[in-house]
Length: 203
Image 1 (cartoon, rainbow, N blue to C red):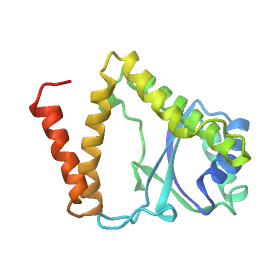
Image 2: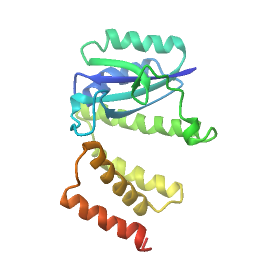
Image 3: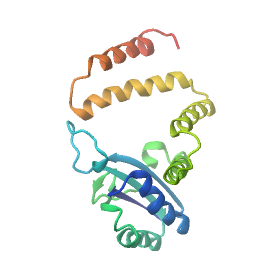
Image 4: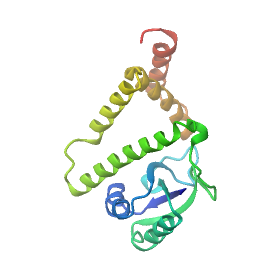
């Protein structure tokens, strides 16, 4: 079993791509494990705005060589009209080999981590299928909020602080990615979170 990372740029809306291309393949050819994230395109650089046409699905499949080859053929044939381009790589770098992330998450925690990523990917995929079919019962934001709260609860972490820390971090990452100074509103929020999280022991 090996991991392969496929960086796929769809030529159709995300929900349509997930519902009509990815879901059918995974249903018929379940790999040992899989997960996906949406990431900036290969040629994206700081200063450029992220548009859907420049966003890739970073899909990782853990499976046999036969399964990987079957997926390549599937993309070429079944996904021909829905895939603008794709390449294999690691963390978006073309030509690199994705070997998992045991080094980052720890060899004992990594198998559970990628299974967790798969579970969230399965939920995201199912919600996309429901949305594509017009059957989505609750907004995706509802599911995310419950996941964020319940995950923190399971790990005995303060969910309010965890969410504020993430918001604080990504407001700063946003400026780096867009290569611009923070807006006045962003600066006020960042400064307030600095005080709230790290200068005043209030949480």
